[in-house]
Length: 115
Image (cartoon, rainbow, N blue to C red; front, side, top):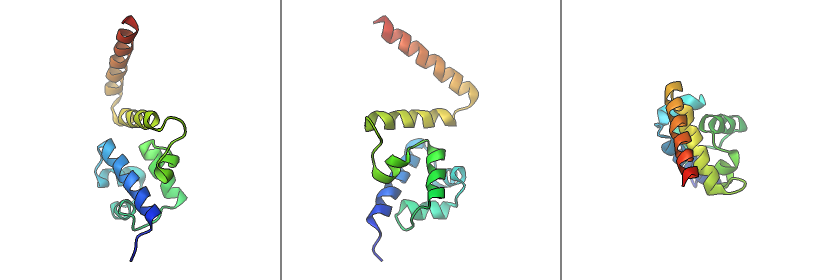
């Protein structure tokens, strides 16, 4: 059976997003409230997404549906993907870790402005 090219492309982007976030398939499927076998089928392009599943994946990963469906995001796509990745990382941090990250980022910007 020939796989649908659109499903394969979407699945590839979902897998890349999950891996960039540092999640295993099992961790990410739990976060998305779907089974890991269903996520595996989606990532391999064997199954299509419903809008409900797409919403769950976008919400869990903080990635736009535009990126998952089309491979692009409005505006500067590489910049938006970097920001989405950073937001995703921050979302997984504890409150203390986010506080430390904010302090580091503030010091970084202070150093940039002092140049």
